[in-house]
Image (cartoon, rainbow, N blue to C red; front, side):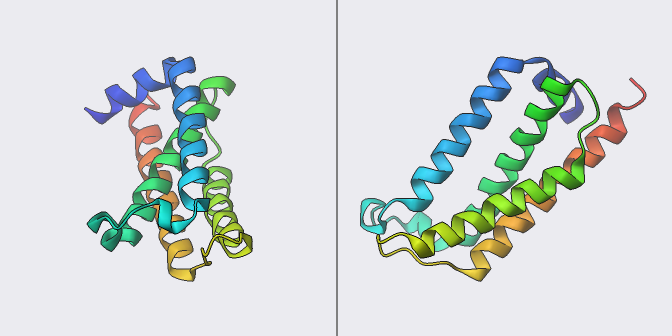
Length: 132
């Protein structure tokens, strides 16, 4: 069933690109914003899970954007490296900003794990749809 959605998303160039850009902007804003602007939500007790899912979604959308505009098989190792680099870059930027944010190795590990999970799902989807 997920293969049907995957194939549909690949055909939706504008939707895929807009989703990817909006997700990227949202991640940058939310991760670099001063922590007092985020509020004291109980959601933040699941911070590492949030990192995992945010970078899972970002990596998946990045891969779809590449596949949509290149019309060929997505280089998954490069996609994984891009997701990992983005996650590590966010942590470094948090350390460099004067807003009371700090870099966290575990956050970066969760970001990388989310990117890896997305790449593994993409590998499965590419395998499932290669004969079609």
